[in-house]
Image (cartoon, helix red, strand yellow):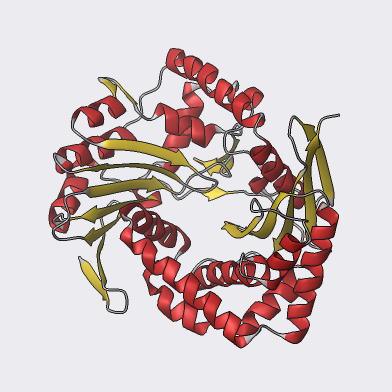
Length: 422
């Protein structure tokens, strides 16, 4: 077992790679009553096309999310109920590139961990249960599709990307999930729910040796295949400049998206994520000159916000909210980005934003869940996220100006709008 102590942030992490390929991370928190376990696989909504046993499979959109729902079924009953009876609070989620199962508890932790590792690694599906779930998830999808925030975001991604799997809705569609069978679910579990494609992260007052021993006893001895995935080739250009949808909304809404150059895996991935976040805040965060001007002009309200997102093979910056004139807002964003690129970032403002962003990362270490998710994402993308202090120090005002000059341009922009139904 390798133990690393991060002196600048006061955290220690014990890591061990099991013989079956599973990465185990334990973050000791002596004296805390709560214990948190996070068991995840690098498999999400984007992973619909992959090669298994020498054959390329095209699986229905939404299958990773569907599989997450069905994994709680066991031959003995339902793992959620079993964990809850043991005093645990379990849950799960599926993102574009990850599916995770987790719980926190103050007692019976090792028994709850055994249950978690068992039901995630041993699938149990029947044609009857799969068919029943189609109705439940189909209803969820219809509710999501009635949500303007979901529509404006997913339509932005479809406008931005020609072929990349980032265009695929994590939940899928009513039509796509109707194609899912028990056999398809077993194929996806065989491909991605293998120890070498997964990581177990535990945070709390636990003995790392006991955690590793339990994982060794419960999980499969073999690592499983290394799966080749196909996300689709993607040009630098956007697929379409603008998309408009009429919905039952009281005010027009918009999202402006900027298609950024994707980062490579490893340390560059973490640096790109931090740089993108800082550039977003400097350009249009609540303390920016642009935000204040747009607010005073009545072009935006407190609903306005922006962010920078990354997934395998894609990266994009976006911002939006309610506005009576989305074009005026996007023109202002482009002009401000061009001004900063030409004149540079004010040094004092840069230091304030960097300090605030660094502080947010530091405060995140107070959350057991945030620690687990951060370590998991770092492992899946090949970097150590707890070395973020060094990355912050490496970023300069010139880096931010160069990012905005390259990425926040009219050529890279798409506009997604929702307007009141006439």
